Length: 150
Image (cartoon, rainbow, N blue to C red; front, side, top):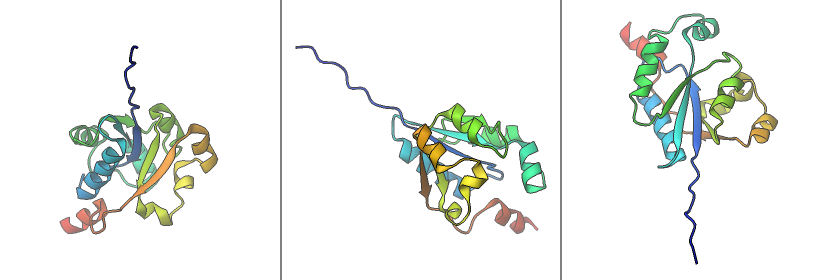
């Protein structure tokens, strides 16, 4: 009797953001993404463009898109970096990544993440995507780092 090989599904985890002034909070988020993806899975980061950041936040990031991308690609918890091609509408980047999970920090639990990302729970259900919250790292942010410098 022949045996067929066991197929192990590759889990794809998506997260996105600006990742300016890369810090321990970013590392903790990406480490959680990698843990959810598992040893055979991949973590995909959708990186905001400089133009979108300036439009959304009213100021340019300190580090350019290419600089931020290089840092993310050097992080052992990140497998792929893609451009957030949709700006305020994250659906195009999410569809390009085709993830099983979207992972965000618990700081978004008190905000309207669905409105921010431009999707609904029904859209996630249609795409068979699960939204996961991971603990937010308190006491560190790009804003905090900027304050330390002044």
